[in-house]
Length: 303
Length: 303
Image (cartoon, rainbow over all chains, first blue to last red; front, side):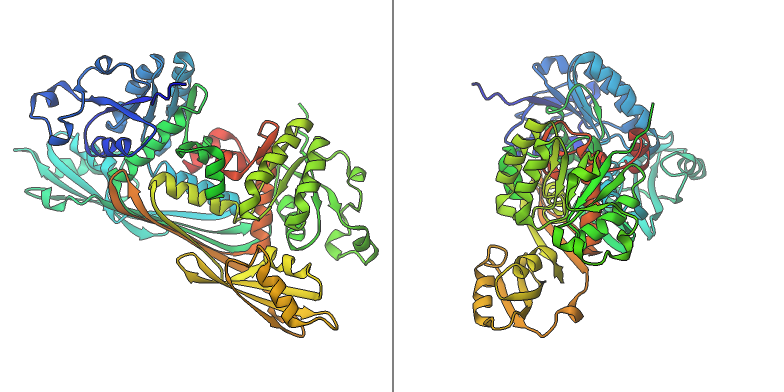
């Protein structure tokens, strides 16, 4: 039997795309088909790490492609994923608009069933692995309160959202935990010539990524010295198992954000190959499906 | 459509059985069929909380029974589960001999397929939910070291193993974490008249529950004042996502042991109803299956 590895295309080459290449290279069971970038990016000189990689603006040139890892802004994901799924290509995204995930999953579920492909949606760390931790905590103590605390750290999704706003040259958005699941957002912006800080501030504070949190917007001449990919999360639950209260659970991590996001997405690519056509959040897939290796060996080692 | 709740029998009435009754009573989607105890136990006066419950030594009297929660010593589990599965009754156990789980799952898988029933095996907190955390950590950072630290706390499985040894009247076994996944076991025994401490000590230290750890055996006149159901665990991983090292993860919990174990087993009963005939470790079941409620509502709330 030929032991052919499935070929995975990375679409988009921001922070997550860059680290996704390393995560695919570290996965013994997956092969990189290539990277898809916008036409404009192809005109610039290739970064060194892409010299040995197929880079194109047209996915068709990378055929065969069994799955696509969508390292693109959240708001670009739905249309892109739908088209790929209908062509029979599995997708993985880290769509991060919590309130929209239900509808996103539903639409990709139809597209996947139509094209005979599987989508794994919201496969980052939040939404994503933190969602798994929240479900686990609730399994163990069904009544109680869970607090999800983010950071301190640079939020990629929030930064991208600000960067796309008119008047903004570049931007970085930091998340500062205040405890009990409350956060401050600190947004540092480089403005385009003639842009007014107050206009940008109002736009940021009205955006769905920011409007529920205390958000401060600061103008800086350059965001470069603020760039730091470290991030973290602390999930806490105190709850009741049966009728016994005071059951206490904590999940904490300190991580490089795009390295973790892309690693989780690569695990989701693997898991996607084991699912029937349709769309899945991480909650709907057995944990063993994310791991490389023989099922009984994994059970022996991890259970 | 009739919305009939599946009926669950609790087999065994030690600590886990007792707390399982509370966990089932707190589950809006499950109904208690009754409790199965040994004939000898039925001769003693009923504990107050069993006055309103069907208690019998014969499962047949509780019919219909769709699932059995096996709150019995690990070494009794395999034979009991096999018989139930072949009769078409789902089982959940908290079988805790790590090295034997693969074979146990395989045998129950055959029995389940034969009887058209599903078994969820090793469904406690370790093996069990800690196994899920280990798998999650490895998904997020495939290369690295995970340390599982237990306690300090009273280990029910270890205590039961000692209690069944000749010469032992009663026993409690405590687990003390030493860091980096190493532990001391402190075993307190009440001896039967004429039993020699040294003989019991050697037997404990040779048992598969104890032989890999530094184990101390102490004789006491009564273990009652040592009884405390608190326990805990700390899982730590430092690993690499893609090619980025120093990714750090921690899972910590402080819990009432039988309350948590039985709550997890009840969640596994629920999940068992959603699986095809066969046997499953917690790793092989999507997390959403353990939770009560509508799939899209759970996604909305937890993802």
